[in-house]
Amino acid sequence: MTPPNAAPRLRDVIEEEITQGVFRPGDRLDELALARRYRVSRTPVREALLQLGASGLVVSRPRRGTIVAAHSAEEVVEMFEVMAELEGMAGKLAARRANDEDRDRLLKSHESCRSAVAASDPDGYYYRNEVFHDAIYLGSHNHFLLEQCGALRRRLKPYRRLQLRFPGRLGTSFAEHESVVRAILDRNPTEAQTLLRSHVIVQGDRFADLIASIRQLAGRADDPTSKPNIATTGE
Image (cartoon, rainbow, N blue to C red):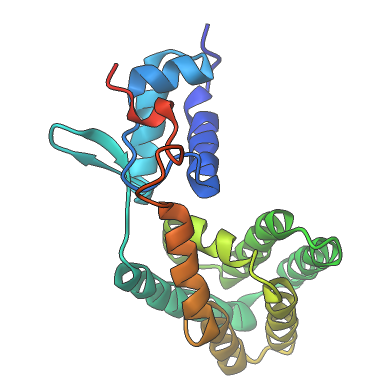
């Protein structure tokens, strides 16, 4: 029997495998094959794919069904541009509105990121980094902004996560966090906004890393072993 609330957990599993490159851009996600893979009924699979579709990680195509979304470099850069503005706004509002509980949450999440940097653990850092940014969104006390930041972050997850694996990025990201925390605690909204926008925007070396991430997710088109049967089956 499929456990209750299986769809959200299944969504996270599929999202993780997209991020890891198990399912690559253009792969077809067949409901029956996925149900067999994860040993659940087709209903939570269908619900999970709908949720992933809402976040933009998968898309429905006529006569092809649900496939893993593929974004051009230009599209991804445009999303990062919007993400940078949203993050900047959240930082500005947090610097103005954060209460003692918000500030404590921000400091704790920042220290949690430190341990992942010390362990050179990019995946661990990514999830701690999510908590850090969530602390900023919560500190903004703007629920709509929190929702929009979360939705766009989910669409950018594969690229943000892979970029953290490039040499030196963990330390750089953490140092940028240090400056953001200081600006918010000092209640300097202009500085917090500028720093967070710069932290997220893609430019210079980070653009090259982004292109490498896109290529890594896509895999080599001429490599017949790069796509698992589960994603391309026509069952």
